[in-house]
Image (cartoon, rainbow, N blue to C red; front, side, top):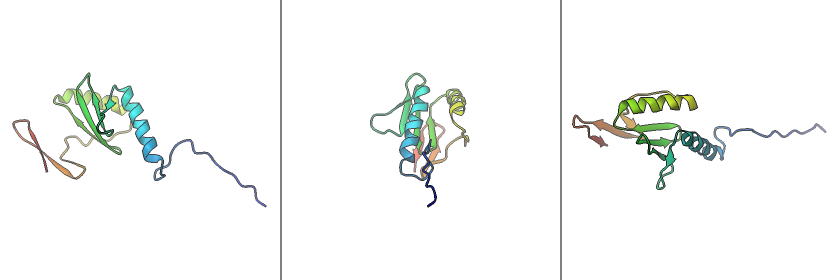
Length: 110
């Protein structure tokens, strides 16, 4: 009879039931290192009180909200040290919602 072997995974594989929870735990830890706290009403929304940046997440998609672009760029640099990211610049769509910016600095969501 052949010898049976069992292997223990050291991290979650994409597609397994526990992978989303482990990713969210990892994300919460790494964003916590950057002084972001999850909002009480929605655990996919994070806020940094010291630099007033709101971060909305959906799995591995992030939407960064802040009036000052230099603060956003500084945050992106810090984020690059934690994750391999692709910067898509100004958001026109997020989760199927169209984002339109107006000259008066307001936005519309469709």
